[in-house]
Length: 191
Picture 1: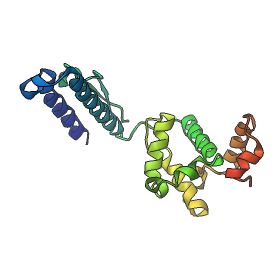
Picture 2: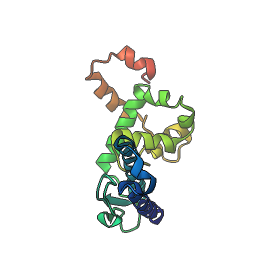
Picture 3: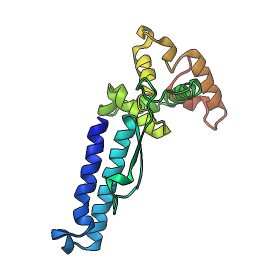
């Protein structure tokens, strides 16, 4: 996949040279329209860089394709020696679990599950949560979401974000906010 996205980056830069240099019909476009095209192409550039990162390649280079060449980009493998994505430390895993527990306690996960695309899709929900919490590994929450959905039948009950220990921690955090117990219990009753 990384080679595919690198080739897409090369193709994007090569195709942009025509309008970038105002060749052919592009010579007749207004500056306003060229700015719109530039913004769109920069979004594509950002998307390709994100796809590469999800596949273990960190891309450094221009943030705009204007006057950029493929040679301006450097690619860094951010995978471990065994080609796995960067693993999270125990502290990061604990932080991710407590954040997820807080979202369950506040009823946010139940609300997100009402969207058809997230209803039975732990992977998509995990990717969304990773973006919200700015965690680079998109699968971070998938294990915890799956463990919660499996409940007692889970093969990894320690991953359940609603374990008694995590619920107590979340309740302690929430008790230090301005939320009242009745507001919190409305979405996730204490057990």
